[in-house]
Amino acid sequence: MTDSALLEEKLNVEKIIETFKSGEKDSKDLSIGLEYERIPIVVNTNKNAQYEDVDGICSFLQDVARADGWDYITDDVTNNIIGLKQMHDTITLEPGCQVELSIQPESDISDLKQKVKTINSAIMPLLDYHGITLLNYGVQPSTTYPYIKLIPKKRYHLMQKYMWGILSDVMMRETAGIQCGIDFTSEEDMAKKFNVAQKMSPFMTAMFANSPIRGGVDTGYKSFRALSWLNTDNDRCGFFNNFEKEFTYKKYVERVLKTPMIFVSRGGNIIDLDGKIDFAEYMRGNYNATMEDFELQANLCFPDVRLRKFIEIRNHDCVDENLMWAIPAIYKGIMYNQDALNYMEEFLETFNYSDICELRYNVVKLALDAKIKNFKVLDIAKEILVTAENSLKVISPQDISFLEGIKELTFQNLTPAEIILKNWYGLWRQDINKFVKSLARV
Image (tube, rainbow, N blue to C red):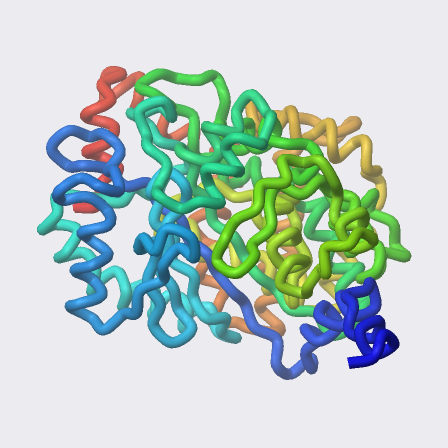
């Protein structure tokens, strides 16, 4: 192969941009994706289920694979089972054995719900057999990270060693969230949706706050999960632009290129880079950077809103099944109706980057009682819900019912966290065992 041919094959920004551009969809083909994490609890002890226990998470995954025809997902380095795959759906493990369902995107939220229901129906008897339950909650309520072993996945051990935030171990081992994926039709459409999603993010964090009890105590925060993300690694978390309207694929790529590298994978081996170079330096160096290297680097960046071949919105506590479907319903209503999207962009225009960044730190403690400038977060949250509801009446009336639970709470100035705390100091009498049993699947 000639030197010029080698040069043409070398990874460059233009080739990376093409991967994002390839995600553009026709407006008739827009769908919603969902990733749904839950906290694994040993029923007899109310402690975190561990990977290697006799009746632990690995054994559970093996039984699911045998019973329902799932294929194993294994770690490239250790060959340990780290998840299952069936067609386009996956069951994977987060660092502390949190169980995540990732569902193939659908245009109809009812189809997403039915798929989750089908998978849950298949795995629940096996969870029972292993004495495990999965909590729809944002943080481990009873077991703190020193007592939760990382699963045997090489990348998680390198991430733990590298990420410098004081709550990064909490984020990795204790937290569970719900992520929503939305499509875009063009670079301009991506930029508008990306920025609106970022500005909406602290208000959504407030509405769905559901992690006040951690380690058996009231933390004083409505979303301790969100607090842990604020204290994980500012190089790769937070926001990846300043809400500029001229946002482009290239600007997002350049932000990823400037992020320090944790590691790279080569031939099944993990090479620890420990933040010594960023990806731009890696591409300029004599490393023969590949698209797989960039995809790994991009996946090791964790902003509240992340660009892939779709827009991934990542900032919601795990909540119960009566509320979780409101998350994709809100985004569908606002993002897939141009009038609603334009309205929300204009409505949030009064808040700049500094305002929203400051609010991120306030809502983790105060949720709907926080303020931004002279506005109550509660009032902005109500407007988001009304806008989504009015839009769904036009574009997807069958999805309006998914908003009922969160609308009822929000319009009473309540979040899931307030309900938890009311029971914590009332019915449960600050007893962590009663708390876990009440949240556990019946």
